[in-house]
Image (cartoon, rainbow, N blue to C red; front, side, top):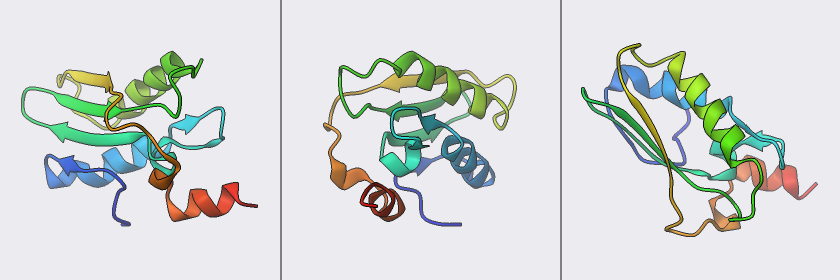
Length: 110
């Protein structure tokens, strides 16, 4: 497993499934995983809920709802069925290209 580009606080048994689920969500404008783009700011899983903090590259992004739906669908497949999921869009800190994974940076520089 590679180190995720975001903080994870939750059961160790869910770390890899959650990471893989989030890596399956693609930012349609860049055609890259939201993890590689650096849009995921953190995941917290407690017995009461699962929470994902994420952002967009721009406030003008027209696909935010689509990405939220994709995050929910991907995580619903790996989280316990009775665990509420909260996907929260945040604007702080502001996304910058420095959040791109090395792979995404190399891909975009081609």
